[in-house]
Length: 381
Image: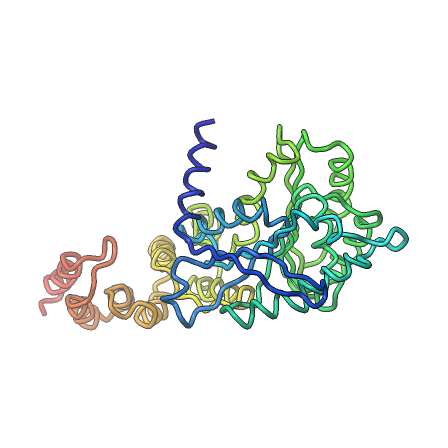
């Protein structure tokens, strides 16, 4: 219980620091004003060139805050990119917004209007007024969770990520999702969750849908499912949101100890190429051209030392000079390359040239002096 109280306190504190705006926009499709909540990343104003993924949160009157708090928390610790979170308040309109035809089970009447409001009005509004990236995730709970999946059937699909919290599926949705996710070509992240104490009819449909989706064999689709022990229809929301974020943004996170042991230390090819590929995927998927983290440089360096892949140090050193030019990271890596490939004089001079640069972790001026002096003693320079 203390853990959940602490987590709630942390998320509330993070959310309070972030910039939350309340806006009202007029919808021609709906013929009325709609209220939205927008949480901007902490450094939105200072990073004037940066663009951000978007979370579109239905049931924003109660679902916005837990999503916004988790997004701020995880992005603060660099476990996901900073993102813009947009909540659509539906307290008075929820049933009408999600309305679907009782013969073909697709949005119709007020539901069709709300469908077009999001795709043709809200997203263009956000693109015009905020610095948005192309990666958009939709979040819904029970009735609105069913609704977000209709956007999968557009060509191309409107969203790249779908977070389904105890979805109350329309008839035929399981079969339609299975067919669509089996054939879709664009990269898609699909998360679904229920709990052992969820509403019985919803839980049964979700379990059935999971069995169907588990059979989907499509490299473009990343499918995740959780069945939380002891979770009710409402309590599962607090457990599913952080889990969905962790799953969807797993490639974004810094290289972990597990990845180091299981992937880097068993790699057959270039460790440098592993690092480049990781950040190429981040840019391709999320539209983000991120500076490579020092943590990831250090993980690659540790693997180079362990596996004695000394040639990787040359390219890694040049890359570190480009990404972190004010630090001694690049000089140290190049010094190690020269030292291990038979060019001690170059190594000594490279270590010496690092004296005027910023220290990084255990890479200190004392270490550079120690490495330089050792080469002098060995070779009499």
